[in-house]
Length: 274
Ligand code: KIV
Image (tube, rainbow, N blue to C red; front, side):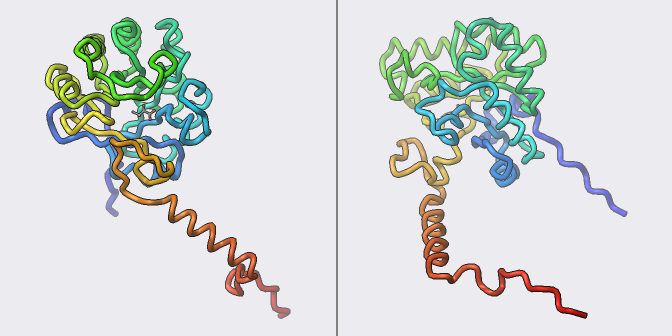
């Protein structure tokens, strides 16, 4: 009898070692069935706090709670065997103190995350070092910071002025120096994303930050065509599932109204008397 080798989950040190190597493939996932579909194709599944908008209909990521992140992290874990799982620390769970950040991170690791992600720069360096020293791998997130939308005033691309570019570069270097294993660069002009990737020793994962990064991430609903007509410039749609779902629902409704569904093949027969 042959016993097939168990599938091993990609580890955080393996992702860290991919700097400058084969590009790292990341997609967001929030549910068990989607994690199951994506798992064979990606290196990491990001349980992003974008789930607040994508799944729960919130206006921004600011209202996402640790409880929401915990439930979706556990769901993604149940649907995957291979990809590393990275879970976002939600707004309010980590900014006030390293101890808060540790408690929130420990919860997400207990639910199945391999690592956590947090937004920020120098102001978060002490927290990142605190977490890493206590066994929690951390992915940084610089450039456009969705959790700071109320300070930034919107979701425009970052790094256009020399002053802002210098600030984002310092944030990236602070995250790497504090022990982050990787860095998301979001919504950042191409030359800056390229320079960060050249100057930090950890892999950069871009979203709206050009092909210069060491890997790419997209919000899965965006790339599947599930988020309406207004696709952001940095998204390539690989499917049009909204159109497919609309067509399916239209067909079902028409069949029910015309009594074409259920058909004889969908009906349970009575037991024949013996
Ligand atoms: O929450 C999220 O999906 C993210 C990605 C945009 C990187 O942080």
